[in-house]
Image (cartoon, rainbow, N blue to C red; front, side):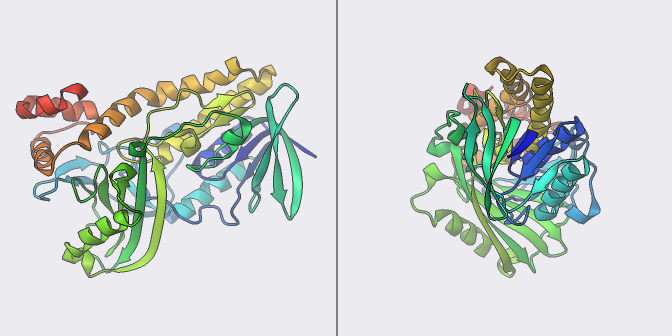
Length: 397
């Protein structure tokens, strides 16, 4: 039997952040990852902004940055004049295009450098609870053996398909079809992407979602799509939408695909409850994906830091009650809830717009200087310049 202060399940960005700050706070910490290679397989568009990095004491490193962009361009269905945004105003997915596998390994290395133990190819198989029902560890398969690991606090960072919280008895949020995005991405070479911008394409080319182009280097880019599953008739629809868009764009149709990534993303409102005695959930496991962008790296790292802070407080006070754990829920909600709720409503409304209305919306906003890509700023611009669209969007203003 092994004993730790904190056990972190999952070594993605959120888990590594939690382990890093827990160890920095003087807690004996174990970070486990079920796969043999942290960061693989890559399941991410690989775009991140710069603004949030100081909050989690993260300094950009050349080895995990493929490209630094000037900003983003958002195209309507007609693909005429785009909305132009600087990297500073374009949200949490614009600034750097990263090598996600290298980024994840770097984050795990930061956790290790702070003193956390790291186990790979070590899945959690079951939850350990004490007689009062508090989560107090996990049984882990490590080096071919079943190893009980007891911990004063457990942080679940096991991603979109998170099982640990459900095993522990934390009520799972049943997602509606409109709150799940099915995504596919091609890494392509020999394409005519612009290294200065990440590009986004809206409308019926990606129903209730968008197509993205993230430049990775000269004539190389991640070209992907996310489509709400409520708009899909069969599992091949998302690939067909992307293939059709590529065929219609010679600069990409001439390229070659060297990697294919698929996955699902939750795009719901912030959960009411992300904790229970002895257990906190972070990142994708806590459903902290931005409903508009589908991005979650920044939110994962920030929530991981918050979880480490609450774990430290709970251990110091020897208090693992619902009341203590609720401190984490409050921190997360104060940080993300208002923005996620607004973006969720915007997502729902945008899914109902015709291509013609979407084009008008993009056309209006492209002529307005927006200081922030927040939904509030966009709606103010519409109200100011194109009031006839306000009626369609009035429930968001």
